[in-house]
Image 1 (cartoon, rainbow, N blue to C red):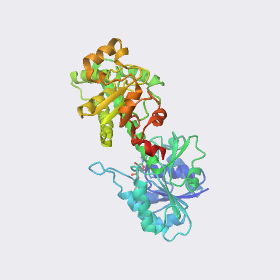
Image 2: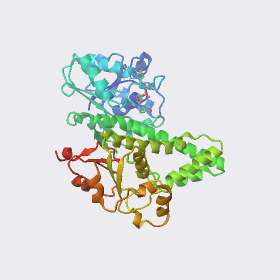
Image 3: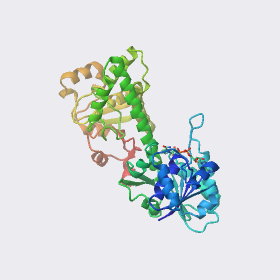
Image 4: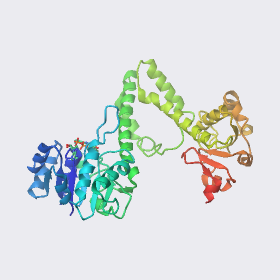
Amino acid sequence: MQSISIFGLGYVGTVTAVCLASRGHKLIGVDPNLSKVERFKSGMSPIVEAGCQEMMTEAVKAGLISATDDAAEAIRQSEISFISVGTPSLRNGKLDLSHVKDVCEAIGGALRTKDSFHWIVLRSTVLPSTTETVVIPAIEAASGKKSGRDFLVCFNPEFLREGTAVADFFNPPFTVVGTDNAKLAAPVLDLYRFLPAQIYETDIEAAEMVKYSCNAFHALKIAFANEIGTVCNMLGVDPKIVADILKADTKLNISPAYLTPGFAFGGSCLPKDLRALTYRVRELGLRLPLLESILPSNTEHIDRAVEAILAIGKRRIGVIGLSFKPGTDDLRESPMVHLVKKLIAEGYQIKIWDENVSLGRLIGSNRQFIHEYIPHIGMLLHENIDDVLAHAEVIVTATNAVPREQLMARLGEGQYLIDVATLDQPVLKAEAIA
Ligand SMILES: NC(=O)c1ccc[n+]([C@@H]2O[C@H](COP(=O)([O-])OP(=O)(O)OC[C@H]3O[C@@H](n4cnc5c(N)ncnc54)[C@H](O)[C@@H]3O)[C@@H](O)[C@H]2O)c1
């Protein structure tokens, strides 16, 4: 069992304290708010949260919980310190790190006179790189000690929801521990091994970002459900029926589908249907900013890819794969067509190859689409991939039309490959070999 100090006796700190105490760990809470400290000491939960008071009573009875406003005392009495102080917004939206900085100084000051190794686990939500650029330097400066030698800082985001926080602690979606020293982090990971959830050990910045990505996704889902529900109401459609069927699709809707970052979406349905829906929304006099922002977001994504290509500074471009996904010749609303149009406008010399798309073989709606809407792009299509590769200083690909390794293997001296589906740094043949 570990001796653990918890800095910040709010929702996260209190729930963490009572839950860890229920596992037999010895907890000391730290907070500058003396009334919270007194409540803690006397076995009264400083927050209202299902199950917390009962667990607090048990922990005090077992002599496993105490509290103080003195950081030095808490550090002396513990091997692991959790930081769960608030990280509110400033008026302009910027993250306020003042409580985090204060607590780092206090912990650092206390570590100055401590001889044994100490673990510090940051649970407050902070933006990527905060742990490495703010927290660790602040503790090193205040303690005169070195991270990785005298102490270790891990980032361990919290996923509890107020109202069900205790249940969430014991049944989380997963546990994430970000660390730059997996070996030294073992005692922190050991605290969570009893939980029925996967433990992800990552670098610190990924762990910091996972928290923001999860909260942004949760907020997005709520706003989406509300906007779709609003459209339903305005159109006289039952929002519950629609939502229930949407949720019943665990193949494409409530699933990992469409959640891997890549290139922009396109094709004959998504852009067209979003346009029709948002047009109808405007006709109804509604403002639904989330739905209306999806197409502009997609266009921005294509523009970023164009910028990445322009930044290479080479003018002869070979495009491999033009349709919106491999294995189809459908060019309608292909984001690659939009990308090529933008490069043409910049005066770039472009040759294009796509196994399924070539002027000669085009039939039906696509043939008409090319002739009517993008004849200038049709003229850039080549039957032979070798012509395109020989022409290109920069090869641009977005799909798996030709697997990346095969393209890598065919790169010539000084040629760049840029995969806009991953927006990797452009790969230069010489560097790739080295
Ligand atoms: N509340 C949630 O549901 C939840 C869930 C996940 C993550 N988080 C994140 O966890 C962090 C804490 O959230 P919270 O809701 O528990 O905050 P809170 O405001 O309820 O509690 C923060 C506590 O920190 C104390 N504090 C401030 N400065 C201190 C210092 N120098 N030393 C010790 N204690 C200090 C405050 O007095 C307060 O009691 C935030 O970063 C938040 O974004 C919150």
